[in-house]
Image (cartoon, rainbow, N blue to C red; front, side, top):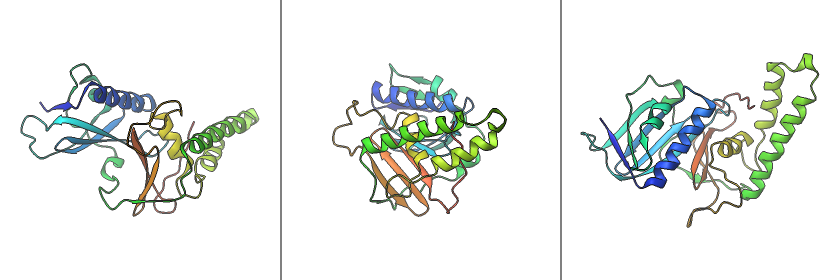
Length: 230
């Protein structure tokens, strides 16, 4: 049995909240765990957004039961949530599962550079709100016989693939950050000493980092996937 000792009960609560949000979008969600020492990265992919979500988890001490260097395992998000004890700030790593295809293609660990052009957090939130409103308005205006999956997907691809500001980051990345609790309302104080939003690039990847987690996507034209957001 592999036991993770999280830094504190707040860290355990944040991990549990992240897992619960992933399960909300996909009851059979899997997560890939990669870590060394006292740092663990939890990767997930909510299908509605088709992005990679990354939650960094602080550990109080390295892993137990013979894992002296690294941890790399794909597990059920639901089972990991059930095995997370917030009051004890621990989590038992479930048995590995056969990973979905995305779990084998993760963003690089290094080589990240800051990308300019990302608007202020309030402007990013406003962009997401406007996109949600437009999607609802346009789909509601469709005649019943045109309200097909193909038509909804077409509208979704058009809206959510638009870039944010002067960047190549699609709106769907910020929408995913909001849906997963990474892009929080302005009234919620940001964590001390951290930039509220920063955009990075490395090779084919873009990564939106917030104080609560990151969203990674492939650049348009370099293997980006189609998307439909409801």
